[in-house]
Length: 497
Ligand code: FRU
Image 1 (cartoon, rainbow, N blue to C red):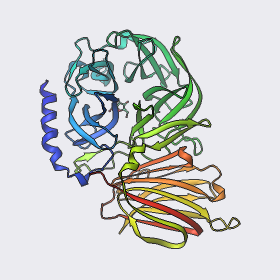
Image 2: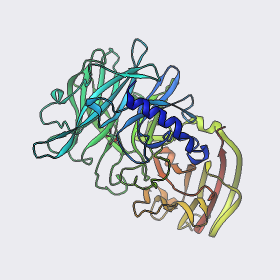
Image 3: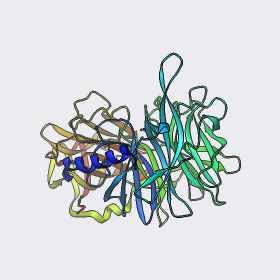
Image 4: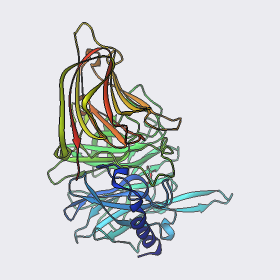
């Protein structure tokens, strides 16, 4: 093992002790210590779910990327394993960037990742050079392949960038061929997805340009994922620098799901329908797996590059994953639901029916908690008198509250974390469109896990995620309406022993 990896492993073992369990999310994976961004190598290996992640153990901010590692048997209770890889080779000395994992025929697990090194151009300016690399292991210890890097600038088609060439997603076709798709920047500065092929997962060559950005989705495209579901083909990716389009496409760095047709012989993907995946503030770079019982499950990084300066650096950890979400495609829409395993941890149900909410905030007996699963359904009191808005206030107490607000007249649902404890002047509020919302009816599933809120609505066609920064003592939940609304609520505590 390299000195660097050994050092990281010793460091995380020592300093994770600074983080008491209640200081971090209960069932969302957070870094063992220090900084986390993208999920990497999300896979099933030796009977357990494996999640690796972009990891800088030494500080609570981005730095030279390692891969952290955790395993789980239910996607919710995660156990840390030692850091898997460190930036310890000349070709990845500036970082082991995002990538994926697959099990080889001989039973070993292969990690495919982006190696980054720095290079000076003739004018003395520094920039990255990104290549694709491999490491092979047994689920705990990984050895970098002696043939690294396996894909370099020499493998790129005309005009493709060697500076922005990253995030390989590997999979195997039914005929046994390995394919890997990476993000890349074309000569016009816009993103493209490049497809590479290998007979054995070690020897790779360029196959095709799988998809190009004609300027329809931002600039650079990061972190592609490809899968088949219910007879259709899907690409998920994270385009950067988007201009917003109404309420359908948020600005900044977003996540996009495309349904279309993959032609395996040509290696091209033709988009038929696309949609943004998450309409909240924090969701990026998701990866998916297929579970043994056939479900497609997605986990993203519950953060956003435009907002991640937000956690004070003195905190011993920063960054967390989203809930694992079961995906399906219905009526030309991506549907997301929290994994069904979550319901197994529900305890202490508190229910209210036919609550008339109007005027002042309504605090109800038992309506509280910071690890909560809640189902809320809202309807008007009278059809001819639809309320103006209903707010569900979460993590409330003292100066703090995070609001989920439904406004029928605008047909929107908003998440607002302005008062969640952030001291930064950045994006704190997002809205999404609720089809037929003007009728004043909505059903919500809201999950709180200490430092985050995730909302699923419109039959799973809308998901909104946000980190919050609120002191744990603020644990009240309230209802408030302008006008009169009628509300049913079931609230459970989520208890992971
Ligand atoms: C996405 C990303 C990836 C890259 C990684 C670096 O969030 O920018 O493209 O591999 O983060 O940490």
